[in-house]
Amino acid sequence: MTTTWFITGTSSGFGRTLTELLLERGDRVAATLRTPARLDDLVARHGDRLWVRALDVTDTAQIREVVDAAFAELGRIDVVVSNAGSGVIGAAEELTDTHIDTLIATNLTGSIQLARAVVPHLRAQGGGRILQLSSMGGHMSFPGFSLYHATKWGIEGFYDALAPEVEPFGIHTTLVEPGMIRTPFYDAVVHATPHPAYADNPAVIRGDIPLEQMAGDQTKVARAMIDLARLRCPPRRRLLGSDAYARVHDALTERLEQVESQRDIAMSTDADDYVATAAMA
Image (cartoon, rainbow, N blue to C red; front, side, top):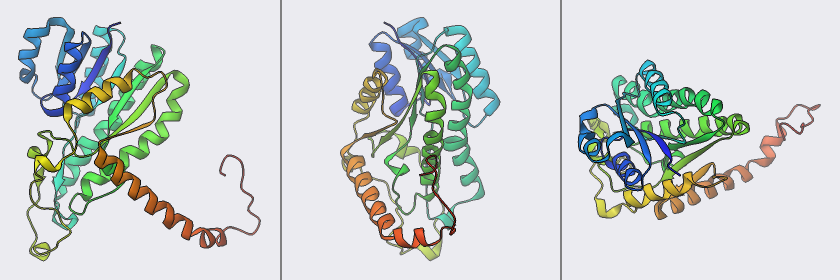
């Protein structure tokens, strides 16, 4: 059966690769991006199996308009991929207000509003899938990426709460958590102006990351996502990449050890008459 996908951020890199693979296997794709002309070659090759619209995910009204149009014109959409995103490198003190507002609007608010826009349609059609691009950076962090991590930890929390809300409607959500993928993403990352106080700070990442130091292959990641969308009961999270597995495993292990070490002090602050209920236990 032909599957219909709705994907944001398809101009290049991972989003473009995913779109190409889906079209090659005979699926339909509603591809959204800021500059639709960048997909003209795919439109010429695949015709009406590729539906293209301009979309800036920082524009909530436009998100709703494009989502509504896609469902109206294409009918059922089986899989929604929230892929659009960007990054800023710099110590937290070096970030500007514009850096903060723009990245949160793109990575966090845009992703939340896309989910809110598609859920009513998916519910009305009896179900569907949402794949939200997160990152291993939704569980751990690197100094110099504080703002990027804020958006990824934020979207992880949003989907943790959203998943059980929508599963009764047949809507399954998965947070896709890759490690470093060899894509043009890092070429587009914004670098904050360095502050003299951080000039010799060894913790703050400054330079470009060589591709050979990145574990992830964007085509393999895209194929893993296609396979993920076909699962009858997909996981709420999917780690992709050996670096993602290792770093998240280490981060969660360390965090659990810290939690265990604080058990007694945590219990000591309960009210004397408190009894844990089943809902909160």
